Image (cartoon, rainbow, N blue to C red; front, side):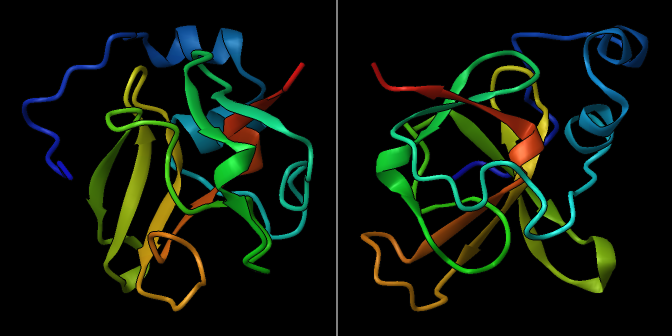
Length: 141
């Protein structure tokens, strides 16, 4: 798990002005400024639809409904990303605590945070706590 900023260059690079033209103010705040939506308010926190969750900024596939689970935390939770390298990890020391930030590998948009060792009965005991507004659900056909 790579957590360093220095050697990373996203495939998609845009200025804040370019992102503002493509995203709503709420999407921009979360995806580009590492904001968060309030718990239990996002459109996918309790979604049960089968499909793939893609980055709302660039469309990269990130997670699937197969790895989604109900953690009762108020945000969509996944026990693993779709594939290795789909997301990247950064140390986050904001809010006076140590966390692992999860970002889209393709465009470097903020998605949410990764928590480990919480005791969930999942194959990884990891919780990718992801903002609904960071993703678009593409239903399975």
